[in-house]
Length: 247
Image (cartoon, one colour):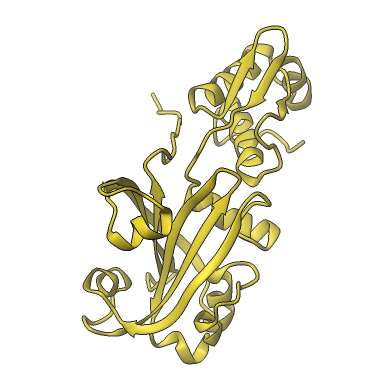
């Protein structure tokens, strides 16, 4: 069990640790979560702190409690945060859990759409690399995503044009190929109507609302190394965060 840190309140550190276990697939739907007493003993905190950690997970819809039985991982559909994808890639060598299956639909060099060249901070009309993938899990189709890269990377990072999966994820591959280290990311979440392509791949009716997630990955010098667009069916929710606010 990891040591308590002072950066976040203890109950948020505990709930965040369990959330990461759920999102990584280490704790699957239906699995029992440690009790208040077990958490208090393992983390060396008071019972009320452990109780607050479990309550945070309940509020996020990640766990459910059954009187006299315990607390269990809920069978919820949760769109993973980009942070969780990247942390999983660095820790386990893959961005996806054991419950997810990934199909690379295409990997090609093409003329960049205006919103893509703008996000990548390259001249309008520049060529870009597009890697489109479909992610499925035990619940069915769950995510349609496209990773965009400057076309100039076609020579230095040819693997981006392969439909084979890249060990450690694309960001780690680009780091290795360019010598530039990813230092921070910026994301945006919104809701909109699905395009025809998105409806086709995700098996959605017309019209259908989707959750749209955009992510830009930056190097230390603010260069944008990657721009991702991920689309989730309407029954998924993005994420819920709790954090302390200083007095």
